[in-house]
Amino acid sequence: MTQVSFEDFEKVEIHVGKIIKVEEFPKAKKPAYKLWIDFGDLGIKKSSAQITKLYQPTELINKLILAVTNFPPRKIADFISEVLVLGVVLDDGQVVLIQPDRDVSVGKKIS
Image (cartoon, rainbow, N blue to C red; front, side, top):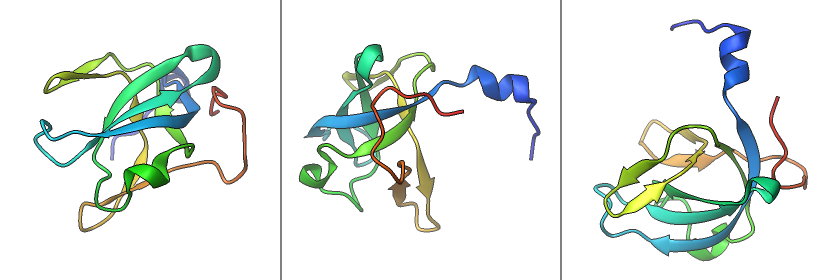
């Protein structure tokens, strides 16, 4: 495992967001959803997330998540993904979302 310095970690912006819209994403190479996430003062950002096996679109609405917000945008098929939603990848490849264990304000930075 490559070690990183604390200064490297400080460069990564991780914020709390709330999923406000979900759409199926049939053009993605692997099954995914298009997500629109409210980050408060940072605005609404889009993300493609491969979380279709464990989550239904309706249960994702209003769910708090954590996401890296300062990666460059990435084009996935015909969609621009602006943030990286964080999750735990299980042995079978399914992804479990990482989320705060309390109700916190959207946009708060993780430190």
